[in-house]
Every structure is written in structure tokens, then in C-alpha cells.
Image 1 (cartoon, one colour):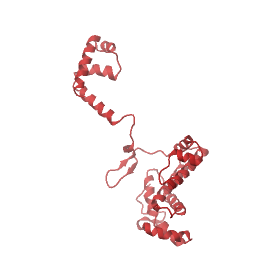
Image 2 (spheres, one colour):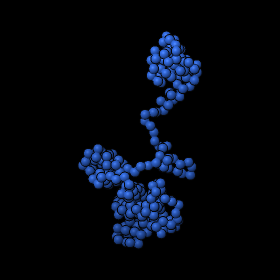
Image 3 (cartoon, helix red, strand yellow):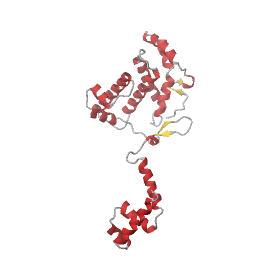
Image 4 (cartoon, helix red, strand yellow):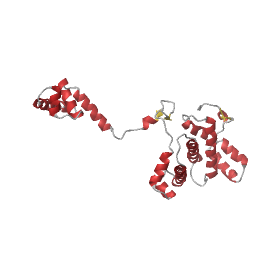
Length: 257
């Protein structure tokens, strides 16, 4: 999918206007009064918002024209449901609506089939989450979504996980003129923390100070799980010698750890 097209769905994106927040506030009363010209002006003034959103999905292999049309549907839904009495910028409300509409489209066209009942539960969960996000002014918890739907938390989690789209670890999540930040840069392994890494590095450096025989014994004893008797048999010395060499090696390593 090319995100550098100037004309999308017959729209010259290079010439799209941009409405300021104050201008949008002035147009809303006219829109609510049924003024079609004001509605058209408002939509045209926010199409760049749709363009900015669809760039997040440019690695999905979908037609940019199709995603733009789907994004416009999300934009129109946002216009129809936006509450001007709330102290919220329109873009803050509209972006999740546009993203949600595009994700629904991608899920419906996904080759991985999910059962109808599970998909329906997921759509209801997404709708409940959007509603609660607007009401609470923050992302709701799974428990809050489940209570809103009157279902178990497990059902919400299972349904939402079932409709998740696979994402490449090399998909960029942010780029602002410099090097891109990819998904893999945001993933961490909780099994290994920074302290573990520093400790392992210290151990490797300390082992570098040992003789080859001492290093061989330490590797077999503590990295391969051998007993002193087993090590003795493998390298051809007595168990007492293994014990002495092991103690000397550990004392030497403690100086560097």
C-alpha cells in the first residue's frame, strides 16, 4: 500500500483544508441544524485526520483507497456522535473512532476465521470500551468493560485476543525525522532484567581471568550441572583436585564480581 499517493479516492490530498478547533466549534451548531454545506466543510476539513490514521496500517497490504473510505466512515460516525458539551477536542474523540472502524474492516477481511459468536462479543467489547473511554476520559480496565457488558472478564479477554491482527516486530510505531522506532524496540522479556544481564556480564569477565582448566571446571559444575565426581571422571583428575581447583577459581572470580 502506497502512503505517498497525492490523489486518493479522487481526492487531491495535497489541497485538503485544515480546520482549527474554533472553526469546528462554530460549525457544529449548523451541522446539528441540518446544514449540509457545514457538514461537508467539516468533513473536508478533517480528512487529513483520516490520512494520518491510515498511515499506521500501511504494512497490511490493503488498498489505501479502501482504507481511506473506511476511515471516512469512522470520521462521519465521530461527527454524528460527538458531544460538544464535553471539554474534549474533536480529534481526540475522532481518532479512536477512525482506528476502530479500520480495525473492524481489517478483521472482517482477515483470512484467519473467528467464530461468529466470539466476533460479536469482541465487537460489543470494543463498543463498550469506546463508550467508557469517552465517559471516563481514560482507557477502561477489562473489569469495567466486562461489567458494562454484564459478562465475565475471561470472555472479554478471549474475544479481544481472538480478533487481534498479527503485527510484524519490524513494523514502525513512530518516526519523526530520525530513526524509526519499531515494535521490537518496545518489547521486553520479563524473564531477564537489567540486573541479570549485568551479573552475567560480570561472571563472564571474571571467568576470563581463570586458567583454562579452572574455567573448564566452573563451566561443567555450574553451567552444565555436573557433580565434582563427574567432572573428575570427565577431565581425568581426582575429585579432591576438582574441589581444590573449584574453590581457588571461585575465590579468584569474587575479586572481579
